[in-house]
Figure (tube, rainbow, N blue to C red):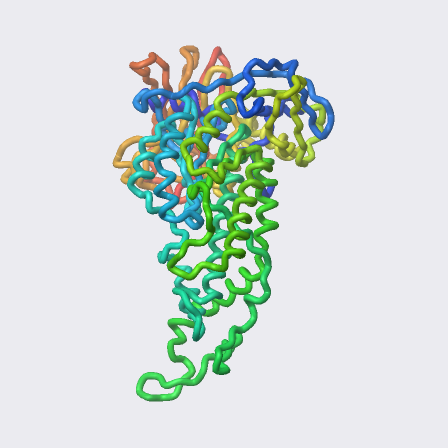
Length: 602
């Protein structure tokens, strides 16, 4: 029981979602009294070795070339975490994201590029990756794993690495480059564009390039989604260890849209043309033979062919590291091949000529170096000692300075502001985030209004509307959301739990505010002894009280004697819709109220 109260006490203060109106949501700098408070994590090195004796006087910060006064300064040195058993895992993905928002914690994300790593590469990198995680993680650090097939909302951050280690050792065949394995989507390209007479290899030249273009775009879009996700939950730096051979960065190629012709005069049909006349069932002439089976697939193939031919991954890539700078995401790409002599494997298809192959190898490496340099990371390439390569990351990230300042620019314009950090001491190299996006007036006003609505007893209609707005934003941005933390002086707002068939009839932290009629809703908050008269009621979306009872109670954790206030609600009597749990309490003679909205499905 104590774990639930701890979640409420240390993680959730008031569950309010900041307005996410920008196309690339990012947790904005904290604002106090209309002034932006910005935190910058600064990495200072000399000849690749961290410099650990700097003070605030040794730094100079410029925002849009305007000098800034350093207000807060910390030097953070991370020690190894020690035994796995001593590390405490977050109780849920929501809690993990809350912990990740703390700039004092380092957050690592291992990105396994399944489409651009061979099975040999995935085997070679597994032990060096495991050694890195063992060496680099501190007691409060968080680490997660992502692949191109995953959504960012599926990333689960934790402190222990046992699950990751077991996964890397058991499933080391995750690399798919140069493999005969293709997914169901790519199989359609083989069916739509079979090899022409005289073409060698398992795929036609057209199908092969379409597959390569699609795979590269899937990876780049996955990285972009990950960047947006991390920027929405965290202002501090996120270190992404990208395991990949690199990318060719395909550019538009109109020759892919030219109809193919065979050596005997055969020509590919024009997309959208009617099917030829053939013999159907019973020997009758028809134009519908095999139409049901292949027409839809051919239409999709032709649409993909046009889109992929016009695709510009080089431009998308340049935009990618621009977004990474805004979200404070740094890339540490590593080529698991080590010192590669050739880019293309000998089989299953014949490799290109040596000049083309070397150009492809150089291009992939240049792409990874560009990504690292432009995001303040390090490219780990051209070295067969993968353990030594990855140790450079450990050295690079074990010591840094957390510097904060109040921006002299008070305009709430939503624009990107550049940050430059310089060291006054000679010979010291500095790496820091490139900048941040300022909040807008709407974001500041909405955040302030929501915090006020949760911290005191506001006007009924405004409070109900503010509470329901959290549901609408929750539905729009789902797991990629920004949490606004705001506290009443002595009481943390309730953490939501659910109990039902999906949780094995046990209380589990609710990952979101959506429930079903088979669930029971449980709320729990930590409070001081002067909080009394804890009562609850259920409201509909108009603020009208309903007759369904909310049972409240008080308990004390045996482990830490923390006073915990509880509230329980049976959802079976309710119909689908939006509801609000009204929780009222008295503290030091003053009555206060907190509204917690939730959505009930069928």
